[in-house]
Image (cartoon, rainbow, N blue to C red):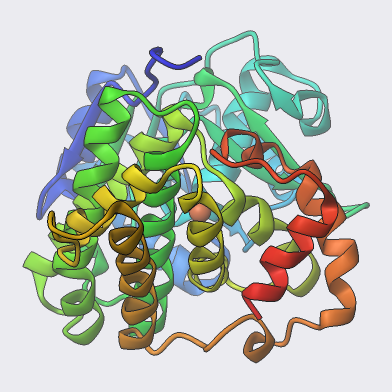
Length: 383
Ligand SMILES: [Fe+2]
């Protein structure tokens, strides 16, 4: 509902914020934590870092490094079992979107029972999650602040989207120090995801004064800091800038909705397993041109936020500058030239277009397609 705002109650964004997790876990009444981290040894390491911080506040914990990319209901249920076995009363997620989404699923089942598929859709959760802290290690998905979890059915591979305000974390943590080791390609992909959140939120049909402010400043910050974070990963000021950009963009779209970039991107991830942020970067120009017909003034303001718009130009000219601003940024970040270069086959586009038509995230796009043929055109223009 536009004008109703959801966000974590406490949000920490500063260098060394990770060290405050113990205090906040204590403030939330946690005594024994399950730490949900990415699958494998890297996740184990990150989980151990959180465990050490919690231990300093006298909180015991168990690391569950079981959240793989595109986390499944099975991964959730394994975490639920461990949570119960260890008698936990606190959830801490560390990582990117996968760890956050898996933790949201675990908290959901712990409090509400049943299986994940029962909660697919909007507002189907009736009980609050256990105390929940999200520690973000990438600057892009916004998952640390959102009320959305995307979980995959392990039998059918169907991606289930669960939206409910109760999935929102109690405390979100963005510590730029955790991001200095992020490789350039991941920095670029997650940064462009943040940019796509901000641009889609700014023109979405549910946009409000608050989401406008959040989205606009996120665009300013991406254009100020993303190239530096990409080229000099150890630059903490650049990482801090991108923490803020991704955080603001996450809050913006959590409250305004997204659009066709995400509607077109999701079926491509499902079919080819391609990285979300890179796909969004490839799709943004065509969707922005499509939207500029109805949202030209807003698109012109986006150009101003990017630093490439000028008041003496027409809205139409500025909107085109916004599109070339995105293309130039993709080029600078050494992104592929289009979907074809990423291996997307033209023969798959009819089926992909049918799927994109069904995507809920497309409902808040400012200019709706009148036919599947127009959706197909957006894919073709992004090849
Ligand atoms: Fe996204």
